[in-house]
Amino acid sequence: MRFLPHELATGSEPGAAAVVIALMDGLPRNSVGECDVLINLSPQAVQEPERFKRLLEIVPQEKEARAASRQKYRFYQDMGIEPGAHEISK
Image (cartoon, rainbow, N blue to C red; front, side, top):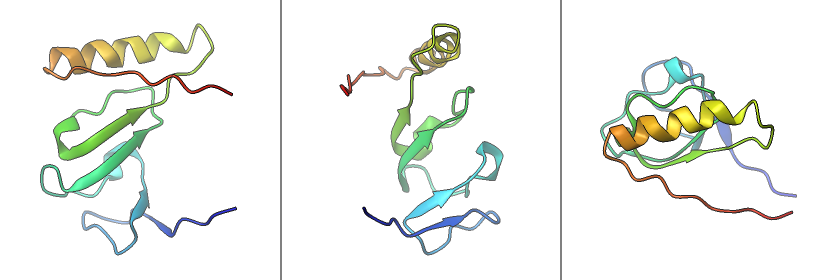
């Protein structure tokens, strides 16, 4: 078991913890590329993906839920980003 020090986003300024948990509209407003990784658990695409060095999208296995992931994939492609895929086995 491991513990990751984290905090909830409470405003526009980033806190001291390396891991911040926030709703999409509550993400701290950092400089472009200042945040290392965003794990997007939302069905919506991240509107400013360039703010993050890496953006991870979790694709659900349920057929109906994958439609949102396909839309996000196309959105990122339209922004000039070439999304990659990583297969994770059980």
